[in-house]
Image 1 (cartoon, rainbow, N blue to C red):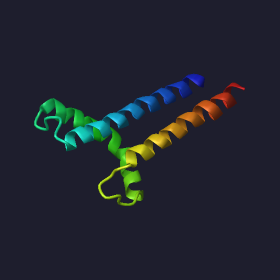
Image 2: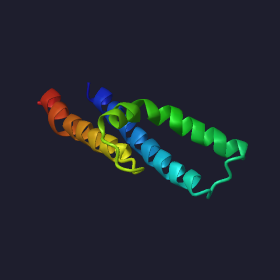
Image 3: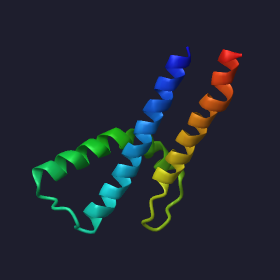
Image 4: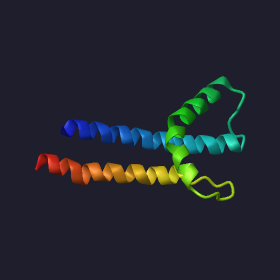
Length: 97
């Protein structure tokens, strides 16, 4: 059972970095730092969008309009941090003890 928790924690860690990568990519794309016509850049952007958007969309629906500032990735990172810490500090010790 501990292996399952460790696998879930690792998956959460990977998703954490995908969200950060998606946010950074969106900034680079918005400020025309990356070439939007490049096929590789488009593929990376499409991948990051498809992986993160299903989790970000419900958060964006609930948040008020902040005038072009999107804080949904920060909210999602906080939720992931809470779930990760809950698994490590509460669920894992309960299973071991």
